[in-house]
Image (cartoon, rainbow, N blue to C red; front, side, top):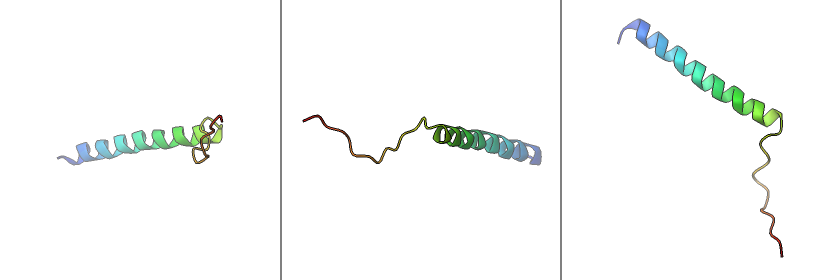
Length: 44
């Protein structure tokens, strides 16, 4: 692979993973994702 192709691949990976990380951080910050460790509520 040429150097330009490797550089473009690395930049694309950083953009994709960076966007994913920012999305997850935004969802966590705004409370869109609740704590999944809680016990499930059962009606008895």
